[in-house]
Image (tube, rainbow, N blue to C red; front, side):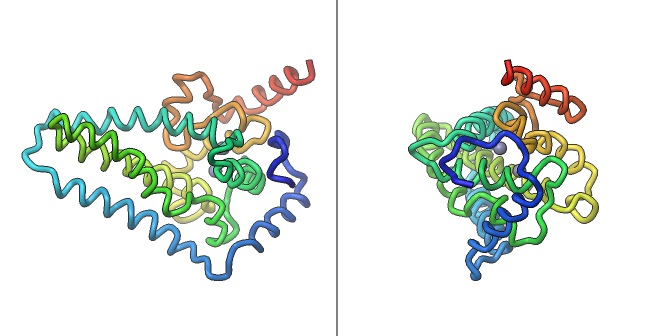
Length: 243
Ligand SMILES: [Zn+2]
Ligand SMILES: [Zn+2]
């Protein structure tokens, strides 16, 4: 499949999906280590969080309100970034689309979400440097809060933002682990996975279930489809496109 083609909104036939999987896996460098990939992401992220928390002085309990506010803001950002950057090829960052829609979505589908082995994490996890990039993109906002004199709020803002990215990464990886054992089999993961698995139906992926963590913004923006309603929504979409 050509990455420049519009998104394919139907599942690949099993043979083509297997061929794509083999082609993508053969492009993974021999030196790639999935554990180093995850270790760097979580190592960078936890170091930023620990540094920020260690710098807090004289915390007013009211400052802790920063955490739920950032959580809601980050949930909305996750929804927007997923919908507009990961499912539409932007000129600025085409790599985000290329890795996500024609690759991640085409090798993992609703009924077959699990990686075959840890090397396939390459097509699940975001690059490790993205955590640093996201922290850097948020630094001006934290800097402005700091300059206004709310030092602890600025530190909590950065810690919560990076914490959200790690939550996203941990949950997304767990959703793509084997569902019948280990972390992938935990009941909380089984429940949360259902929402993301609906998004992995190619017939629905361009329109529904853009939240990966908790579907708050999908509810706000009315893009929420429950697992039991998947076929209803998919056939409704087919009727609309045929009309
Ligand atoms: Zn996924
Ligand atoms: Zn997606």
